[in-house]
Amino acid sequence: MCGIVGIVAHSSVNQTIYDALTVLQHRGQDAAGIVTVDGEAFRLRKANGLVKDVFQSKHMLRLQGNIGIGHVRYPTAGSSSSSEAQPFYVNSPFGITLAHNGNLTNAHELSEQMAQMRRHINTNSDSELLLNVLAHEIQQQPGYVLTPEQVFEAVTKLHARVRGAYACVALIVGQGLVAFRDRNGIRPLVLGKRSTDKGQEYMVASESVALDAVGFEYIRDVAPGEAVFVDRDGQLFTKQCAQAPQLSPCIFEFVYFARPDSTIDGISVYASRVNMGRKLGAKIAREWEDHDIDVVIPIPETSCDIALQIANELDLPYRQGFVKNRYVGRTFIMPGQEERKKSVRRKLNAIGQEFKGKNVLLVDDSVVRGTTSEQIIEMARESGARKVYFASAAPEIRFPNVYGIDMPSSQELIAHGRDVEEVCKLIGADGLIYQDLPDLVAAVSEENPTVSRFDTSVFNGQYVTQDVDQAYLDRLNEDRSDDAKSKRDSEQSSNLEIHNVCHP
Ligand SMILES: O=P(O)(O)OC[C@H]1O[C@H](OP(=O)(O)OP(=O)(O)O)[C@H](O)[C@@H]1O
Ligand SMILES: NC(=O)CC[C@H](N)C(=O)O
Ligand SMILES: [Mg+2]
Image (cartoon, rainbow, N blue to C red; front, side, top):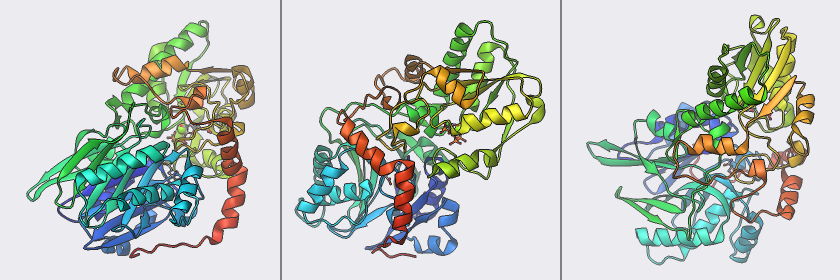
């Protein structure tokens, strides 16, 4: 996952974009970048690292301008090299820079098309390809000033070429800011506004929490397939640019990725997690009628709201048995398995008295590779737990994700090719229970019944773009499994970092 933000304001945007990125940090910890337009020049700062480390005062001072975009990255294509940090830039037409959340499923095809159009792509990032497709389509529009209709036509043509998941924001020098969401609306994107003495200001962001943090008012979610254009005079234009759009948001945003205080497509992430807890609690009461659980303990941080509701359902005490080190980030979105493994014990520590002599039910939002559950169960036993049961608010994850979550290889998923008993044994639990998929879908859609379809591919292998076949998944596995990545990243450490934009 990645986080994106774009702002058109009447005063400097550098600090506001920075602040918005800090509340989107949970979507990507690998790299961060901001581009502003200062007169006719782009100002860019991007590098590997967290927002607080990438931007020092000297960079902020150079990021002048009233219009800008930002990105936090969690790589799902290409490498982790800083040269693939975003936003990406092309100098023609006008000068365009783009930030992308998602993952394209026809990158190979696009790469061939770009070569035929004699457009040079310097990295393996699908986002660089997407920018070049946009640049190509804008290039086809005549004149020196782009009309909103021309921008929308370019996005319409882009939708016709590009497949997969993409929520994007782009700046076009001298023209304005354009943002768009793929025809399935797989990744989230919201639009907000702020009134000032000088007039209206607009902002787009991955999650509504970013609007809240910087004092923008939520207008609405960008619709699937829709494009938003804020021109150089600050006027807002919107248009549906895709054929047969159908909202199908990624359900994993609600399970894990998004912050609980965000609302996505009219669904409160927090409320959906409470519902997940209610439904899973009911299943535990039903299937483990004679259970001997003494206490419910969450695995911080994402599962806390879910576990509290399970405790309520089962009429059991809820205890914070693990303390989270607030200075360690999210484990699952770390780049390699070694790092992820080490991070669990650095991040979580048990409070002995909550475990000693007790039968505990540990609750997590999901079990993906099993990195967390395996170690956490071991820690609970080391702390004296008598029995350790485990509940997952998401069903078994058995299929790769191709839309912006780095789960490229089914072999790395602990539930792939295994039944619940086998997984239970592997993670070392005394009992394991998963949420059922219809219950998960109901938990989320209850909050907005107008959203009837979700991408649930990691659970059932049904990909909403309908273009993902075994050959694609095999190639993904070859390109991006943990082994392939570590080999490639070490080979590419000397990747040329070409940033032909004013760089503070
Ligand atoms: O089975 P695994 O491969 O370990 O992945 C699943 C775990 O990873 C995530 O936690 P993470 O530490 O990333 O973030 P959190 O603090 O938001 O829970 C998620 O909440 C699970 O705890
Ligand atoms: N997680 C994402 O949204 C990743 C965006 C893009 N595919 C990249 O790898 O940079
Ligand atoms: Mg977690």
